[in-house]
Length: 66
Image (tube, rainbow, N blue to C red; front, side, top):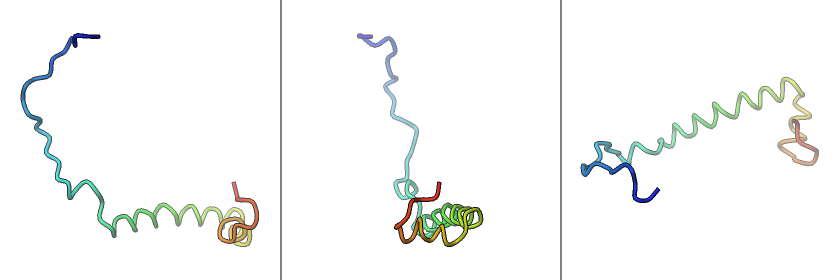
């Protein structure tokens, strides 16, 4: 709708963003990826066997495990 029914207050925002805190640090990124990938790989190996996991994911010469 024009004109706008709600007018913003003429004050500055109170939110202060520290740009150094926005991105996670490199060691935390590595830790996150390890915590995300290892359980997935362990599940696939335990339920489908290492040979099928190796063939479908690492070598990529066969179809992927679903």
